[in-house]
Length: 239
Image (cartoon, rainbow, N blue to C red):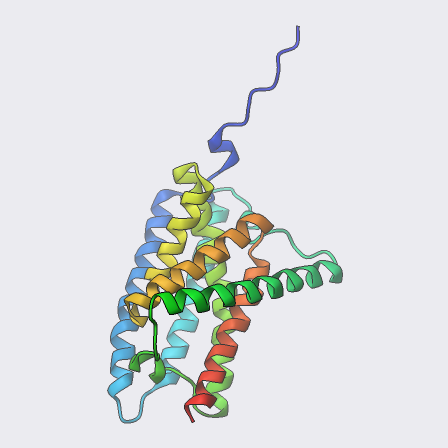
């Protein structure tokens, strides 16, 4: 007599991609760089000749090092990095599909963020945020490189890695998305409390997108474009 297949357990459905110790180290690194960013951006806001390039370079190096640390941790655990990032693009049509998904997401997310920003009464950017905006061609080029890095690395860190780990921990996709979004907001604490809430909401939208798509690639595209455009437009509008 044949027996029916056992139902898939939640631990099988939501597997961990690395050890808890590795995740704690990732979170500790994020706390450390957030604390440093707060101190450094406050110093930039009152400096006569702010060294924005140093800020860009440190964040750039930190994000890529953390990205590599996550990849190493995932491989050490025996999991596939594709679980974190998503399947490789196999054709130009797949690339265009994710660009289209990202564009649609960007339109909807921008409208929602505008509404949330109004509800939170978010006004002009804080002085420390204005201080990090690029000035001149070299800084703009570095800003775009940093924004591209943020798109690739932060989507991998928060939506690819942490979100999966929190989903595995809680055995709940909504809970994992919310906790990861909260961590994403907290990592931007140097921007002020209300911005943390807004960024966490944005992170939750990215989390839903990544979970639905099964890949962080559309989010990478949107994140990189959003940060690049926001910084460059902010710099030109300031002048």
